[in-house]
Figure 1 (cartoon, rainbow, N blue to C red):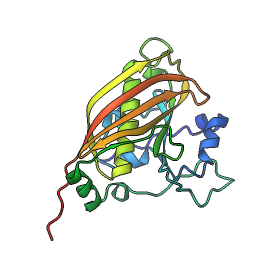
Figure 2 (cartoon, one colour):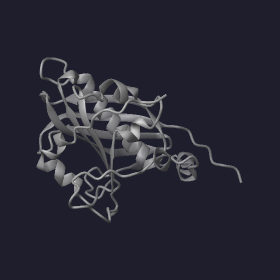
Figure 3 (cartoon, helix red, strand yellow):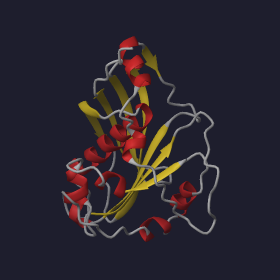
Length: 227
């Protein structure tokens, strides 16, 4: 199965100074466009086939901030957007003994959401009218999907394991007018064995918050390999 390549309207992002500041932030070590998700046949078809169009989701970038002092070593000043060549297999290794040990230990770990050096996933999205509910207003289901997607990707990258949503709560704070460029960010709140809780926000990039989300996710089971 192949996915037809769409046009990525990155100019929608480079028109905003707050987006360009993220592209040159050394604490953001990886920037992926939609190709990372299109590479997985049958995965996330809602986005890769249904919404990635010039009239719905015009552009999409996934930014990874691992935290804990990790930095990007090189930033090209002449290239505002840097695409990394990370593959899905590098993010989700076929053999993951570290994750197997975490699941077996079942430690209840609480994360400090206020830690500026904490792990964070950020998604930039350019939205057009085909994603509307009412005229010039983003559909609430799309808002929920973006929150869910950002939290799910955060867990995949942090633990190197796919996951499924167990529970999702969304609080809508104000109307999101389209067309618009938004920032969706997510942080891990708690983990215990295969279960992870995360929080996420849809923001305007300059301090405004459109929606908040909380999600509970269950990671795919990994069994410790026998020696």
